[in-house]
Length: 315
Ligand SMILES: [Zn+2]
Image: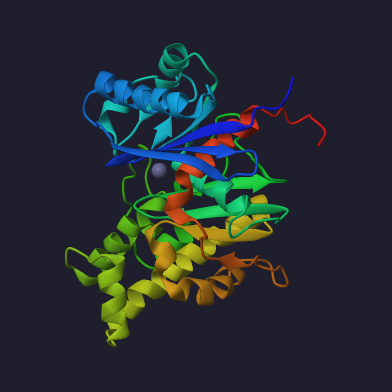
């Protein structure tokens, strides 16, 4: 059977859904965007299926579909937990789409799609392995080895944002034990994501806290407290990266999410991670994203393409 030569990928965001059709060379042949219906599951499914059918008509295909969905999928029930698209919470999207669209549908999260896209033609192209480290509203990741996403049994491989922060760091910086959206406490995400940085600033300043951008401007104007907040943030992030090196030992790390736009991370994070590693152990290159968020739909198409190629298949 000849290999299919078109795959669809859809990136589902809190405000828009983007569909791309990629060919075997990963060139985008077709693109479509619609607003995301976030509050009614049936309206959401109808909009999504409408996009796919329109692509089928334009391209004369019925291509396999990959979806990048924000939030967490319960591995036991397949139900979503999504803050950005509330109508998905508690619903099982995959069987509904497979039935309605009569084709293979593969789900991943937005971080996994980011990593796949950066691993293929992006910042980590041709790296033997790469860790897509996303520090945005939340903290997530995708780990790609030999070009393929490593998802693990629960599909949560690389979810470093929900590793607990080291008690020694909580004590050293006298940080509060913050509740995490996942239901646990003191997850790294609560301290190092974009919202975590705001919480760090709030805690250390006794104010409501600022966004990363505002805080960086303040630091650049010579504000010592803003510098101190970034120093704590860098140390916590360095400690997390050291754990990622010990767990995954990636050849390249690509930063994603809003905080990937902070230039000091590329300069200072390697030394911050090295300080938490065994002496002599090397920290991988830390690179800015090539596609960034714009690669989400492309990464989702790669999910579909990889699902169609069993791991055992010889190249
Ligand atoms: Zn958590």
